[in-house]
Image 1: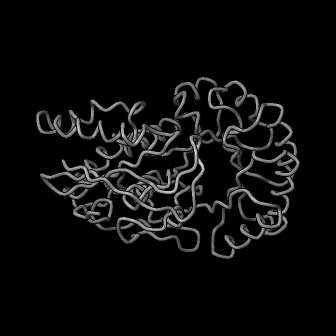
Image 2 (image 1 turned 60 degrees about the horizontal axis):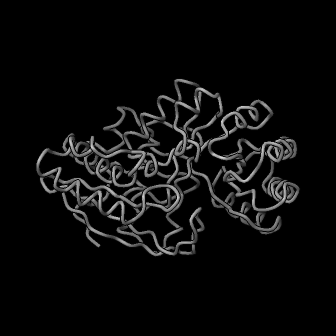
Length: 342
């Protein structure tokens, strides 16, 4: 097992819970005995720190030498070091798929989707600019747009969504993501304003641990999707509270592609729809997330169209967005050269 540090400049600064970042930094994990590549790209506020990820991966190298890959993976706690675990898990899954003569998606499920719909994120701006961005996304072939809300007043955000709906018409799907900005009272006011605008779901309207509050917001005309709650309190607690309609899965933040798939299948058994998104990963992690979504045959748009957030990448993108969809590579494994170095 080899661990190579990597750094990718962003096209524009990224605001996170712990500050603004201008580069995505992490590690490529490559297996030495046979081809297999993974990506460990920690994101502040979502995973362990960069230094924590580095330390764990260096320790894992010696465990691999002494006890093997599976034992090393078992020692990595997905709640403590999810990015490091994602890197090793993905490298192992990539190798297994290559040895089986399959794509990663086909190795996870015998009948994966050939392509996956993706949403355009139009962010937070004035009503006029938000509507312009949404219109441009629809013109480019996207059928789903996602707006960031919560930084403005409820009235301003409802006006922004109304401007988008007026601009794009009734057919495209509109989602909003509040990133836990609201109180229950705020969220109820927002829902009252958003229901007439046919918003499909609100992502993380309340604090991650307020499961009772989220449960109380359901069945009011807009679905509730949980993202940060999965990271902070776990799927069992979400299911026990009946707190969500949709589960947002970030493989890098939950500890690996295969663990994310297990969580998605468990959620489906309890009638929650899974949606897969990235944490602005490099081409290895991003393409692997696409394979995951394809293996789940997800029909709702996923948050995978994030390549344009990067100014540079490890390798050419094997699955660029076209007409609002990403076609799953049919090459072996992830579809990215496991020998690539940066």
